[in-house]
Image (cartoon, rainbow, N blue to C red; front, side, top):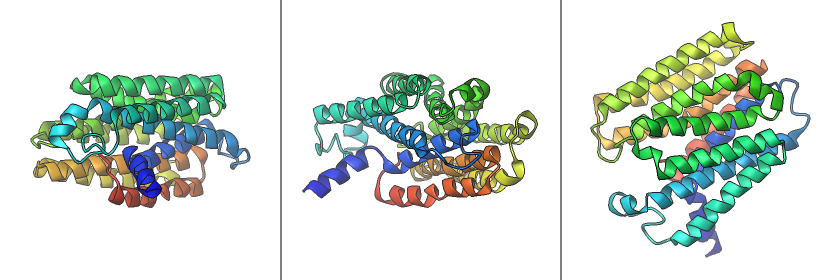
Length: 297
């Protein structure tokens, strides 16, 4: 009984997606320079990983709370519409996760705490309001991921002021994933997926330009960049040519999972350490395994 209850709570927070959020934080820490000399002080990074688990998980829980009426029609098998958990229990669970996310970050620095609080507010704003607005929704979700990347960067507080503009990468990419997910249960969103693929190309161009703008080591990041783009673009292309719910949902799933090689590219490129990119990439088989057992979308 206890085991089934635990599985229920784990399933609720979309664990495959949470793993991608952890990759964001590690990439952010690499961007800041914290990992350039190796991991000599693990506690700040562990706290920020705990923070992102709470923030992402809490955001997902409240997303399902606000979507209850729609899910009762479109996805009655989900945890809340099926009655496996009550709404009050879900509200308590989601609140605890968000609070954990903010407090764990605040233990690293006040800047980390402020970023975590901002991510929590952005997540709730998306869940309740902006996801129903065609342009604002994808932008809002992208800002959540940008905040998550900056949460990792804030492990060295001064680095936030230097690298804040790199948040444009997750803003564009998650906007692309969110665009792809629009009407995923209905199909007929070819225009949105095509626009999303265009945003992916823009991100690739930005990554190539990082060589001139920063100390980014393209030769170390290239293989991870190629993996990200091929995983993501091939699924989107299939969703465009055969625009049916199954292919659209797979494009969303691959978009979420491909965040890990994208983060691996940034981790390797900014730290100057290939092995760090490989460590981040190891999160991909974990996320794929979890995606087979638990929902991603």
